[in-house]
Image (tube, rainbow, N blue to C red):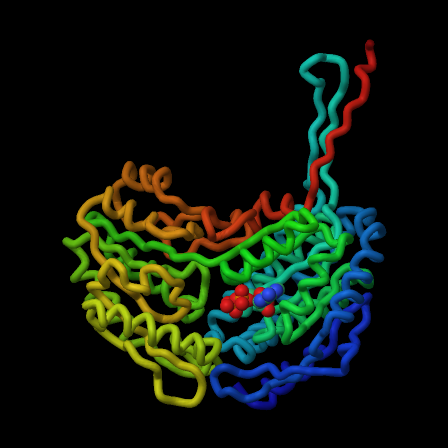
Length: 490
Ligand code: ADP
């Protein structure tokens, strides 16, 4: 990748706040830097929004609300569809942009353009399919109409790990449903959201329907927006502690909330599993995004009869993973997002080893410029190890064993999280039992990646509230209204 093309892509990103259809600097005039995690270099400087900018963005969303809600669903859908088409035309630029600001290997950024873009297309198609129902009340005295209406202005907070998909997964259903929004991207990766907002403008989105506030002070800016009585909905993807805090803040205004929080996914390999499929699935479930996904397999729980073979086979794969900047051809292990992430991997592996686990490959920071941690396999991880409790968010595959199905299920459910579970078995009855018994919002049965725009993504327990994508995704942005009229024959 030439430096000239990298610079051209970066230069094409707006650097202001999008408020009411126009790009503008922060009211304070402040800016903050965005870094390439592979080198630590500053790649762009963007507006650092403050409290008054958050308020202005919400003003714009409120003002644009009634007209957008009345806009024909077909017209709303076509704006999103045009944005999807534009994204496809510029997919190489968007992919490069994501790799530059977030670090993931270019092939994964390309995959995210496909995945993230699909939310624009999926919800463009859903725009004209929002339906209600009609019926007679049980007493026979009236006719009931149930209709769906946009909830109103939304505040959308997104994380850094999937800069495109996390944005489109919220923006597309909100706008399709007829809501207006303020989006606040993660301060580590604001560029992709800025790019997509400009793309939506180009696709014909009216002024004020989508507003973007980039800021280095997320809490300070978000508090007043969430407390504003005109806001009706808060959608957040990020860590469980921040999600809990936001839920408390949202309680005052009794806001509708969608929360996509942390995970601690078990990956179960039974003694009858197709090990080729399990190893291939493990590579995807663990190493996609260099492990930086809330859906990443966090705990490999393997039947004791096949644990040694499974460990040897995944180790052989991971040893061969090329490490490098995401823009280099064939890289599997790109940088982690920042130094804190590297230290976390170091601490978790150190704790596991201290309690008796064995490192089969990796197990250390990669000594080079940027924030890299080696692709790692640890086995014999003992109960009580922190790595079984915390979200690793890095390229560390941690293996423990179980003796039978009951123990596997008990271990898998022994977490406050419940986002996704993976299981590999050839026994269809067992597969069905696992679907029933695992406390999880999503499940990959003999597959290692489950995300797609048609699926209701979301968790149970402390992994979250609500679903994004699928038929369910748009309902997060609609409220149900029931109307009774007298029976026409009485
Ligand atoms: P991570 O630890 O993965 O960075 P966070 O939950 O801290 O996850 O961040 C996810 C998103 O939440 C980011 O956009 C971040 O700016 C935002 N965020 C963090 N703290 C707050 C807060 N107190 N109020 C509102 N948004 C916040």
